[in-house]
Length: 440
Image 1 (cartoon, one colour):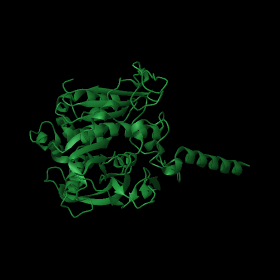
Image 2 (cartoon, one colour; image 1 turned 90 degrees about the vertical axis):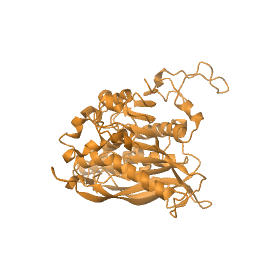
Image 3 (cartoon, rainbow, N blue to C red; image 1 turned 30 degrees about the vertical axis):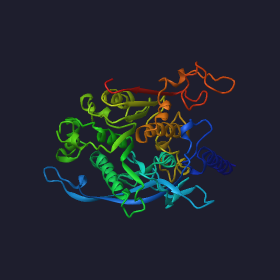
Image 4 (cartoon, rainbow, N blue to C red; image 1 turned 60 degrees about the horizontal axis):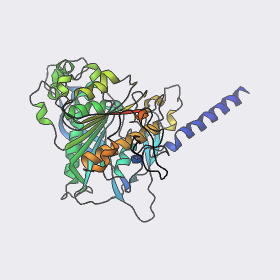
């Protein structure tokens, strides 16, 4: 009887897992998702490329008191793009061999992108969005957002950061140094490949002069630094920092640092950016940020922290046009990670399976993904495409619970209607969107 009970319990658990994470899909849009979470009209292709940055400082092999070691740093990048499909060809695809938080657990994800599909040409090219994962993570961690944006006319490149992935997690110093340089390396290479005269399949497809960046956790740390958040002297010399003060290249005290700000980067989204809570920045250094930025966080974040972390950066970046989207009571996984793959729900050989790396204890992951996709669409469409009509999805009363839902008999908003644009009744509860203009 005990054996039968154990088998029944196991079968029930597997069924519950399948119901909670339907076939490891990254493209689920629920009926209560906000309006702009829906996929766009374009088919999506995806291709994996390798990008090598020559002669990069080799942080892990640099010894104190000696010149920096050098190496060629090769990154694997997943690129999603608008595509053209054959008549009747289904808009779906698989991502086999995806490594999870427990590197021994390898899964297949399912979405809408078609592997190596023919790019859809567009005069002038598409804006570029570069995605940077957490520590550890991989290029698929925000693949829900990548597919979604590509269907709306973006080329999206998501990086596997060397020394910082699930199966290649090494000393933290490498991640601290390399994050901004990795993003710039990918930006430079995709600009080269995407030029009209390029012989690559990307030729004429990418307008890198309209680039957005998205970073989650340590990716968010890199984004803040890319935008002008120079590191503090204390952080440059911290015990976890690279030797010989190499982080000083990206510090507020370095007069050359702000000259490296890249004018191609026109907008950014920093999700739970790590660093403020441990003194990576101070209020004075954050004043140099001038690029429009949307911060995203859970109010219960105990990794990057909220009041002393993401919110503090939002308040201190006084020279930027900036937003802060808060998932009330969500923790560090607010919005960014894909739904936990089924295989991570239960332990394997007694090892932690990694489920909590993806999920949140309060919020449903698919719902959070849909909300992030909605606001990322509005933010990037306004800042990278000049679509002024999308600004209405950002000009909202701050607290979603305070909105008044008032439609007339024909379903049109009355003068009393203040509910969040694109959200159906009751669905903005638990969300806060704050906005501060430059100088505030």
